[in-house]
Length: 331
Image (cartoon, rainbow, N blue to C red):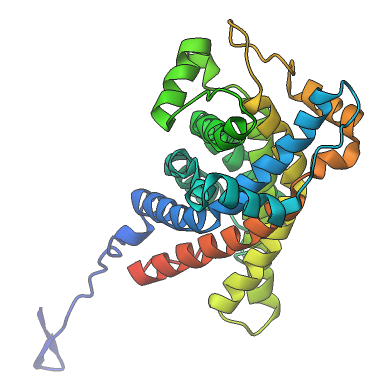
């Protein structure tokens, strides 16, 4: 535009404010996909530890059943012995038995928990004016996102647990219950209907809420504390330190609920789809403590922690790196 200034014509430009460009990398669907990819990578790498943990959690139950209310002297091989035993007795490939439904679970679970938490943090609960996110808000976000995600993904987790125990059943001379994830899904549906797909969902949701309280809340809080109180940038080292804290806290808080969840899901059912060994998660908790002692609730803690530490590390490093590569903001 031209205008006259002191008798001379001067060209002036009117500034226009363009809206910020849309960043697909921060979009809902992209965050969801990145979460699923990162979780799948972490799951495949650490899955043998998950299988070992599940077998250890069932050992005490089998011992108690074999001798009434007293624990029989069945061989407890420990974490390493159990893993080596599975590889030797069933084949090394069986260390990944059930990994397919585990990945199916993460297609739902991991995507929902991350997206749900980020939206609660950024839009519902909201950060403080200085950009910090109080730990109590983070805890609410972690518990809620974990519970919602796990409830929706519970059927896939049920199939995974049943697939994991098949090798053990066959070694004990018991007939196989399921032959594949598809067969397990059909069997559960035929015995308990749609409701049967959510067998054990209550302890499952409880576990997920506690694990995410430990994982999401701890990672988010630890990362912010590191960035705020040290000179470390938002880098791989920061992610490693934060994920290490997250894995330890998640394992400590989630193992008792994980033991109960595994036993409720693995128990046989009657013709109406009701559990034969336990009436509920509370009943399972009480019987486990009564028959095996309080520390039975932490059976498999070492493999849980050893799995959660590298799982959390692999997931968060993959998640943050993929986001950075795509041009998204950090978590």
